[in-house]
Image (cartoon, rainbow over all chains, first blue to last red; front, top):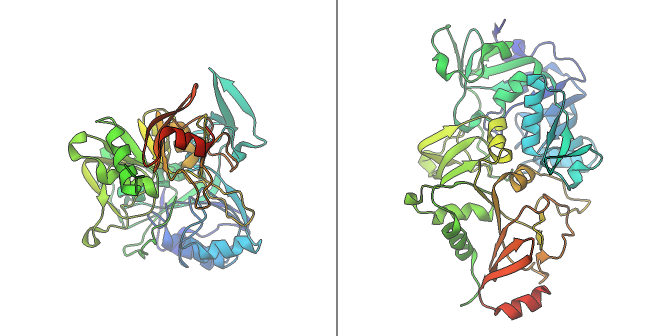
Length: 231
Length: 206
């Protein structure tokens, strides 16, 4: 059953030290800034963060990193034009980095949410990112064995929700939200507004409420312009 | 004919994309291919952060923080565009649904191995993004790049010295000096710009 939280702080309450936190977003599009800020305020530490990037500028995920609360980050593209917080932590050996190809990141999250034990994937065959991984040839093609990525918590941003936790997204801000929502023990979504059941078109719901544990309205989220950067 | 500039290479790639194809243009140089695709070609652009039917870059008044491309540049949507999540987006590649992808490269080997994600220098922060998924996912992978490094070393090489992105995945290489078709029989030179084929083969050691 989905709980409608009163505040972002309530929505992230109870995340323990050492948790693995899935954080939605591609750059700043879909990054749940208010939830990340609330998580930072809890003072929780020793986190493993799974997110496509490693923070932009000095806000949101970058601020969480800067506060020293993240031990390890799993992402596809940490290095960006405005990833100075991560870059400095990495170069000074204060954060661990696990680089995962973007499609594998998405599929490993999807597998976790779908109860798949592992899967064979052609991405990365013959590259350093497949080193040490089990490989198999199936119908003449080579594959690498990849394991699911599960979260203790997922923090995602959607566009609108109803009080049952059904979510709709907006444009390319959807990105990792739907797969992360399925892949965590506790999924928290921030949205612009939470409405009564029946207000969303059931045909348009992207994430059904069964995947969402807490939802919170953040009617005027911070918007930070991206400094166009790769990946 | 002199060697091609970047726009010239992009124009050449665009002309070779079959009408009606689903195409992903990698970040950086390949993005310019979009400028040379005619609207009536029916080509539909895919961006791996979750969109088909990507339009041109947004003007200042059109910027929407929720609508960006894989390079995180604000873009527009075309009529008939669609949005989807990341796992679906990469299923489009891995599942063989995407017709063409155009990528930049540090090096391409004669057999089509691609190196484009990491220089391998200890001080470099590794970042792969969607490069490995794209390299093995699209039905055809085209590379566009300058043929030589600033220091004059060929980037089309017998075997890559940089860390690999994908094995035997590139079928064509578009460069400022020529277009190369890669296959089991080795490297074929389709056309050259500013150098004769024999001079080009000499400089490459082909």
